[in-house]
Length: 198
Image (cartoon, rainbow, N blue to C red):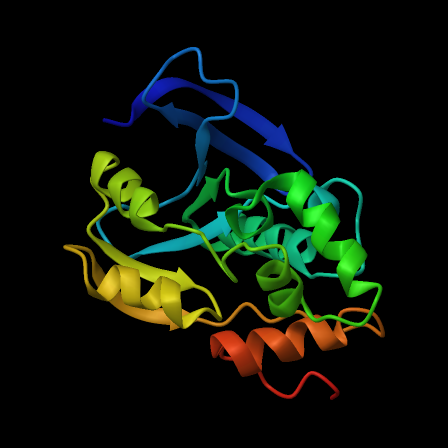
């Protein structure tokens, strides 16, 4: 069972957050994280973002995706409005960084993100948001506003004991490189995106 292993206040450029490491094992070097804004009011629906790790976008500022920008926007929003980011260690839709780079190589040959994964014999998306629900329960959060464009995340909440009060869009404008990636998100996964050429 997942549990809190460590926590501390961490000042960031967006404000100070309570960062909580969660895993089954205290020796886990890659625990999931709950990032809690200082002024979160737990008596009201809590703003929550489920965010899967993306080292290429968040650390190295890759233009192939909008993951880093989404995390930045979520931290800014949650600092200003209160809430929690559930940071999940599910790199590359949970295929890992090595397979992700292999998929990137195939994308250079003309495959889209889904086609590349499937050509490698991998799932189009292998993420599991059940652990995010488990973390919300552990933190005693039962009523949320979910920051997402992904209907799969909405479905996980709706099928859980957590009450979904509302969905808050978190759309980042496409750049010349990410446009196709975002279109695949919309066409294949049904992400709730406006036309990204606007």
